[in-house]
Length: 341
Image 1 (cartoon, rainbow, N blue to C red):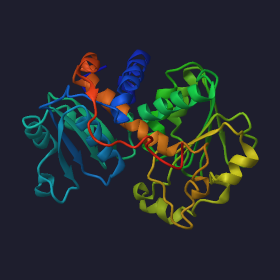
Image 2: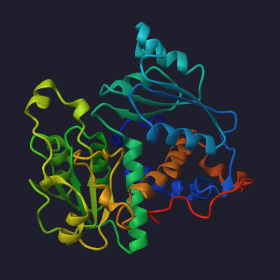
Image 3: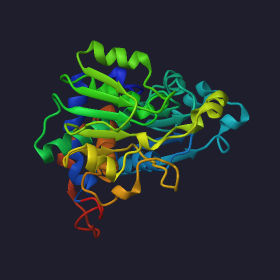
Image 4: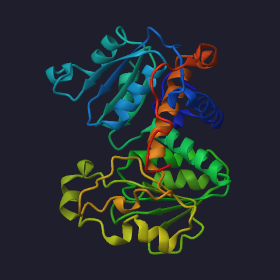
């Protein structure tokens, strides 16, 4: 694993397996049963120049649970970039202040440009329609845990990716990560104009996976193991796309009726969040709330141990975790989460 986490492309299968193992060791800390201070004194610079709540707070919590502290910057308005400062200058300055950096930026390739000017680890928290590698890693960790609970194996699994496959950076990273493993069956379903980029389809197919594109969810998915659906990324549409896009029809909605009529009782539903829960938004339907097949909140919980694993690996303290553990001293609920357990 390189000194940064900018793209899934930088990961080999053994790197991913290592992160999965380290994340599993982080569970007692993430679940608030143990404390560690292996990063005591270390400072994280969280630079989010694009809207985020869940991802930003998840990175913050992961670093703090390892004993570090966090400095936050959110939005362009309150940053020196609003005064014309370059990514290069910001990177050089920040590397003198902090020990690791998480960056989210609306322009694809910007995080890699930023990382090239610093000698501290940089994690890509999302660069426009490009990639979101930590999300893909926590998604894979979620699939691994859900399959273990259900007695399934990843090899030969049938995974459906649906929604905005063109601009959805999470599915770009996830499909590349999945392609590192034994042959899978991957089905792609998206509204017209939002299809998965061809180079990603070619990459996955070249690695021996069976990949199929369909134009509707009204099909037999009785052998489906995972459905991963995404919000339509309208904020990334061009003017022409906004003018031509007619919206999402019922043929592309993941809801209770779709699961009950077309899938199996063990099909797992995932979504990178946020989902648009407003009436008429046609995102992942809230009628699945409370359904045990809905894994989206278990998925977000899994972001903490995985991001802890990423920090521990990049900062080379993963072998010090257990010897620094001690019990928590504050009140912790018996379970975290209510409706989805």
